[in-house]
Image (tube, rainbow, N blue to C red):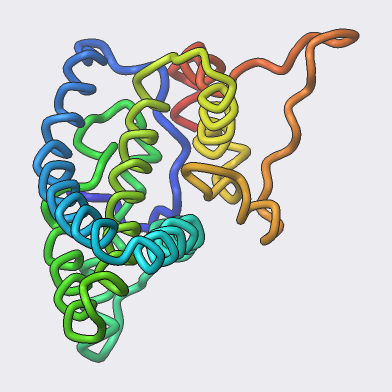
Length: 240
């Protein structure tokens, strides 16, 4: 039974990982759930972008850039206000539907951030994408709004794979080290109300939800990685 945010809020993570859980298997589950979405969205984006850049490169570049920039704000707003927002049940069709659809989202991911069933999106995102695509073609030529939607969808695919990598990989690039610390601070008990950006901290800076700066090496000991802290937490502490 999924956790309800209107009842449980955003729970602290359960660590250490329970016995019998194999992280490689959880990672495989997460990948397999998102492969179909990746293929569908990338196929659409590639088709539209190739056609648009061949015949209308100026429009294509402008609308693609707009879609990518719009995604950075959209991912922040959805994460902060939809995925972290409570949606209590109540009278009325829309309030009840919002409760049944949104209130079950994301709390399980925070409680079990190692669980591959809650890492990435799934095919339930396809109907929303199809609606955006259909409306975009109705409103403008293929090299305008449909390209913007392609930018949104491909940015979503990229964001979800970054999110997967943050949970299961240890890449050495400076960007990855930054976004990994940023996201695992968000998952720590002290950071659930901060760090809502999934691919950058831009909108966290603007909106006042920026995580505290990481202490540099030298002088004092470099601040430990929040993921490593959680992995080492005693089971009794993780179940407070």
